[in-house]
Image (cartoon, rainbow over all chains, first blue to last red; front, side, top):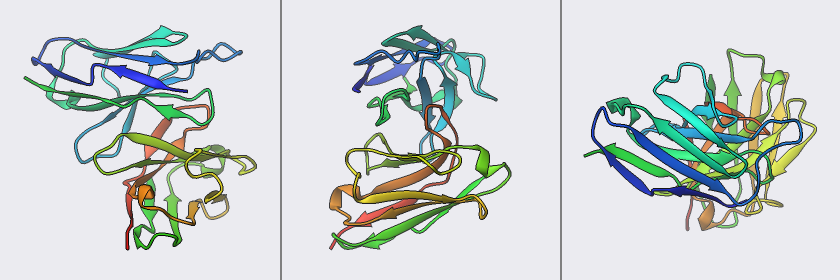
Amino acid sequence: IVMTQTPVSLSVTPGQPASISCKSSQSLLQNGGKTHLYWYLQKPGQSPKLLIYEVSRRFSGVSERVSGSGSGTDFTLTISRVEAEDVGVYYCMQGKHLPFTFGPGTRVDFK
Amino acid sequence: QLLQSGGGLVQPGGSLRLSCAASGFTFSDYAMSWVRQAPGKGLEWVSGITAPGGSMYYADSVKGRFTISRDNSENMLSLQMNSLRAEDTAVYYCAIGGVYRGMDVWGQGTTVTVSS
């Protein structure tokens, strides 16, 4: 399964919103109703961290400014007001079809 | 917590074994995975294993060369890497989950360099 992300990079003004699109080449909806789409953030020099699981469920400790949406093959990560802690590379990942695959990443930094 | 060890420099065709020691949670309850990141590149899911250890899954790029395993009595995850190639050079991360679920805790990463 091929995962695509747009844009490749995003320069944002602190306090402004940011949005990243992720598309999968096949539906990520499982028969039981779960959709296996995850979002991760890798800050510079750090291990990746889980932000969102099953499209829109925020992982423990993740800011309410971060939200996920979408269905089927089209997904979006939105940061309502970008702050310094949001800088890094964002990856979507599909966990329905083996082998599991990541998108190429979207780099977010400040203008 | 996940504490990784075992990375290093190895010649093409050689072997290396990565380990990931788990603590602070019931290891035997969770599937585990390995993810790698080549220098300057994105993330690549490498392998996953179910909680009991009965099912293992691999990326096409490592199938037949890498073997994932776990010892639930020792809270240890391993990745045996054989027939290593230059393109296997990467930072390798172990993570909780990753088999039909998100990876919610990651290790610190260990560097594998395949070069003559």
